[in-house]
Length: 253
Image 1 (cartoon, rainbow, N blue to C red):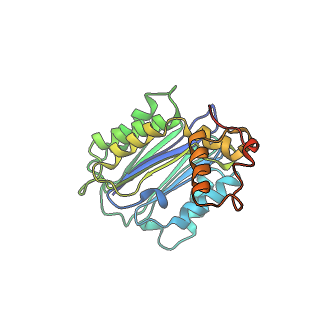
Image 2: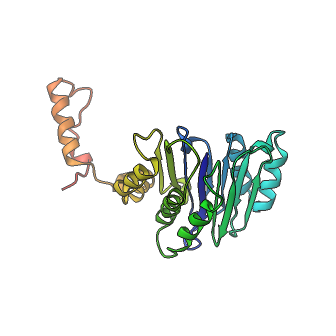
Image 3: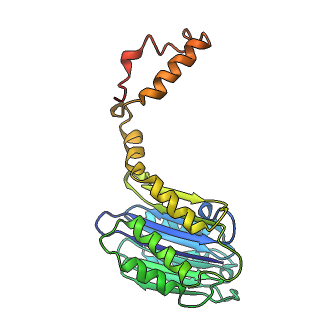
């Protein structure tokens, strides 16, 4: 009941994934990324511990095959699981558990793995991978979203409507460029994820600046003045001496 893709940008070292399903909050449990090292997808009767194991191994520099071997050997329930791994060299490894009763498939293009289970047809991952490959110069997030949309248009999953979706792209210093989630959609989750991504815009870089160089980011003037006014209205200036310390902050124009 899930289709997804994981890929990398060889130019920047970023890894990313896009995923959707008819269950809730898929972004909370299936995707693991290590910037510059790789990505892992763990789905179908998901055990998030498999994702976490994959992340640890990728961070240590393990190959995709080695990661998958360790994951498969770590649990007696591996035949219920679907797992995909891409490593630092773009090598890919995939496991489809024999206890999966549905149509399942995967497809590979350079720097990308698409896979799914409980699919409408076996060509869904092919459409996803081809859409990813069709935009080699686009940002990684856009390529992943295009792949997810292509999977939906190719038939997606059998049964219920898509309730949740997620898009995540890694960044340096362990700060993701984006980690966007639709946990419960009131329409099509992939469409809502697209809207969220468009609204997100360049906020990833702004968040990085705040995290790494907070002194260099001006304070929003409107929020500052509203806070000063509220402090004054509640007679809290002794507790919050913001007005007296006004020169300590650089405000936006």
